[in-house]
Image (cartoon, rainbow, N blue to C red; front, top):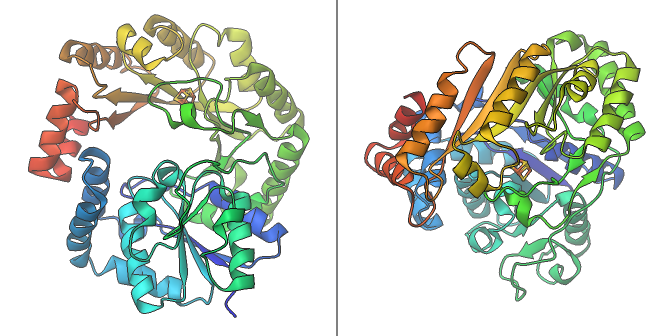
Length: 440
Ligand code: SF4
């Protein structure tokens, strides 16, 4: 009988490498349960194309029904050396019972096309969708041809239970009553709570090794906490039921030390060429936990380059920044989202624009040399003059080691004037419309 699972990261719609950190959690928990697994990571280098950019942008910005999205995605991919059947070939070359896709909004459409292809070629395989996109969308994806089940929430326990159930009964229906956070397609039970959440299991970051060599940006993702103590209105964390949880500090540093030893033994790339990116939602959100980890990292005396997502504001003073830099922090990602105090307040962002700027200056002064600033354009009632406030704020940062990530929001109904303009451009010009806004 078939056994185990193949974990698939579908090709991204951008040219940025993004290895799903969730695979470390899933694979570690499968290993602990003795369940065999294989990982297929589709890097952007392999399939980068305008078609994938367009599919991702349409899914993000037009908010069309899934059936229409899949029809367009099917047309766009059929002229691309048949991405869908190539990925299906690679999945079907193994003999696993389950196929697990980790999906974001920008790559879920291609994953659904592959699921359909697999079910037509080998109906015995069970395709499971999980990841950020499925959290609130189980009923949308669970009804599609080829999708057997949808995991809502953290999959460490759910996936293991699914694998065990399928290995025992060789079917899906009938298992759902017992598995929290899993919606089985065609089941009587509506997709809903309970969403599965867990604490931190012992992780094997060594799983990342084969992908570290491939990653063009040489970033190693790590996670010290789950959830966030803030409640920004646009963020799915405000709906997340698990709350804020941290890993045990000793367990975390022990896992990191093991990963460093693996990398040193491998020698390609060298540790000093890498950035260890703490993907915590807000690394300094709970300062006492953040400080405990910084002290432990400093004690390791490893001199690794760290990056973290920080909440910038008056609370992040020079003393705290010194603790972060002594732990190895050299790069950061900050959520400005808007240069307008009114819009930031509506978003429920902590701190004012001037406090954000003062904090940014302190970080640069302390030696951070790579700072990403995230901006949201198209907030529901954002006016054009507020959009210009953001543009002017960013313009004054031109001498700083800063780069900007632009998030274009168009799905609000009714959209803001800015959001409506973006949607119109994407509709009329396809992916190049949104690219034009991002470049402009
Ligand atoms: S600080 Fe970041 S992760 Fe936390 S709620 Fe706000 S946007 Fe979400």
